[in-house]
Image (cartoon, rainbow, N blue to C red; front, side, top):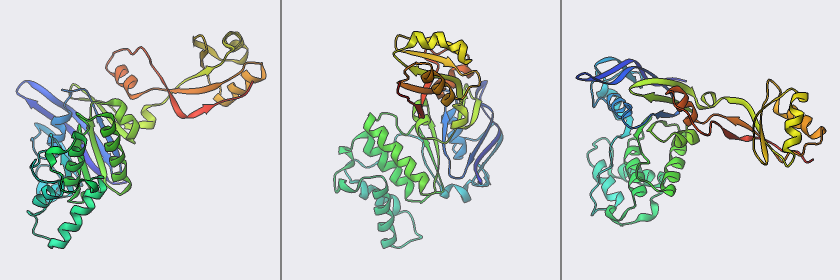
Length: 320
């Protein structure tokens, strides 16, 4: 995998205010990379530095193998970005807006421009809008049109700053699906967001930023490591609690219809078998993993009431 975005010791100060401090990022080709942090954490400043819109106070930026901002002119045409709320001519249709954007290009035929516009419209699912003016679009449709405008360049890298802001749940779902599709088609996506659950759902790698500093970076699967505990749904909670010492596990918590057990090195499937063999009816066994929210709270020194979440695909059940 080649590295498409790299920062080393990146710093941005505004007077005495440190917006970004000693930031080291690494985004690999084919990533759907989540850049996480609360509002005011330095995400947007970092995005603007990656695009050459803001100059760093110190450090180095390389995008697609070139130094930014020094070599931005040669590399940024291969980068698509949305860093603010998209702006279009409201009285014109989506395709007509894209045609105006494409009219600035002089390296293709009219037929080639029409093909690119049709392809971009199809990729974002706006084929059925016809001549409807953009002022009649929903917020989600406008966001998709903005992404279509980005795709006109057929970029190798797409950088998006909070692309789901203001969207309803359906619009968020549509943008998620679109980003996944872009990655399957070979585009690397850098997604800046304060929505941890959103990144957890779709990104393969992520970085967590707080007060301008990098707290963690890596594969999402590694960041969300198992806690070493499982939750057992059973009508025999008392029996499971009493049995725990004999089968070498520890009771972490108990509820009316479930118990959380610390595995203490035991495999979940071995625990399930031991419970059933000793007469405990197991309705469900769920391996607990941390959420990105929990990781963020841990790294920033806060506490969460609900520390863990079950992981899909790690469920065993046995009949008693």
